[in-house]
Length: 154
Image 1 (tube, rainbow, N blue to C red):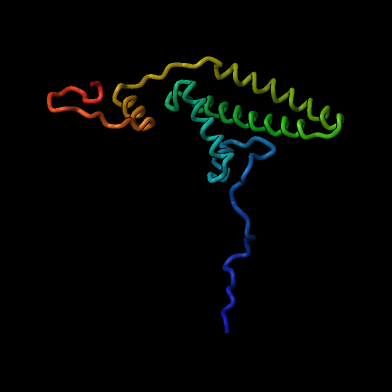
Image 2: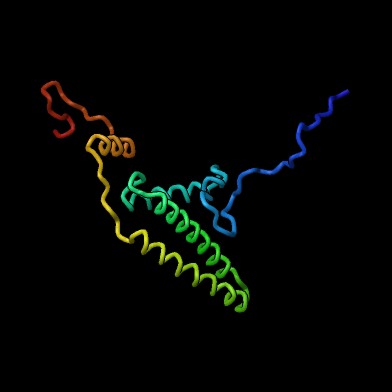
């Protein structure tokens, strides 16, 4: 007779991590997302890109990091509202979405102004820059002849 498996807990079979951002902002919302989803990877990539534009992760204060998370949350919220507006079948639904869209746009613009819209230079050393460039480009090794000259140039 086969054994019946009895669960050790009464917790339902549900993923503990969310697959999409919540309707309301919560601090560190990106850490609460399921890291395997495409949305989370896109948000993480966007966060890293914007942090790099602001001078790098090391230059971000706690407040700027929090503002950057809010900026990303508003961007994803705007994308959802715009998607809903594009698929809306009647004008009443579209006009109902227009108010929250305008408020989110104004909030996004305010955060962008606070963070700084222009890119800022990062302080890096030459060794780390060369390591980053060679890792990302995976340059082929140079062929050098016995006399020390490149064979590919000839």
